Image (cartoon, rainbow, N blue to C red; front, side, top):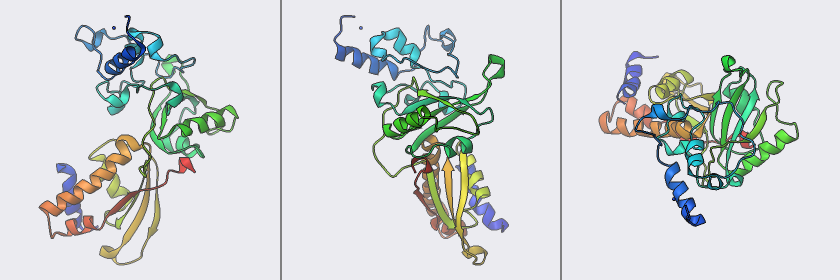
Length: 296
C-alpha cells in the first residue's frame, strides 16, 4: 500500500410508595429502574451480583414483588465489562413492559469455546439480532459451559427461537443450549432497515478487512460473526473497488457505531482535507444496512 495514502487515511483514527394505585406503582417502577442505585453513597454496599450464568425461571413482574426486588433485579448480568455492564446506561435496565413483550433471551449450556460465528450462525428463521453478549465458562465457580444474552429487534425472534429450542432443533456444535427469558426485559424496536450487518463498498485501499478492522478498533470495541468479500474488481490500484459484508455481533454499540464512524470520517475529511487523496477516497465509500441472516 502506498505510504502516502496510508498515512492520509489513518490520520483520522488518532483524532478521532404503599397504598398507591397500580398506575402509581408502575410509574414508580419506571422511575427507579432508570436511575443507577447506590446504597450509602457507595457502590461497595451493593449486594454482590448473582451468578452471571444463572437461568431465570418462573419470572414474576417486578410490580408484584415490591420496590426492593425491583432495584435488586434491575442489575445487569455482566457488570465487569465496558458498556455491557455499566449501571449508568439505561440500556442495561429492564424496560417497563410485560415479560410476554420482551425481546431478550438468556441462553446457557453453550459450547465452552462458543464464539459469535458459532452462536449467530446457528440462529436461523428467527429475526434480526439487536445485541449479543457471550459469557465464557467460569470453571472455578462450576460453570463449565458458556452462556449468552441474545436480544432481538422484535418479539417474534424470541418466540421463534423458543419454539426451535422446545422442539430440539436448536443445537450448536453438538450441544443443546437451554433457552429462557432474560430477567432484563427489553422492549421491541421500531421497524427499520437497521441491522447488525453492514454492506460497505468503495476503494479497495479502504474497504479491506485489515484497514477497516484497525479503523473500527480505534473508535469502539466490537465482536464479529464474520466478514465476507462480496466482490472486487480487477482494476489498477487506485481504481480497485471492493464490497464487503460485515456481520457484527450486535447492532447496539457495534454496527450502529461503525455506520456512524464512516459517515463522520467522511464529513471530517471534507471539512479538513478537501481536495486530498484521502478525502476523495473516503467520499467514494458507501455504507448501508444489510439483511441479517438470523432472520432468514
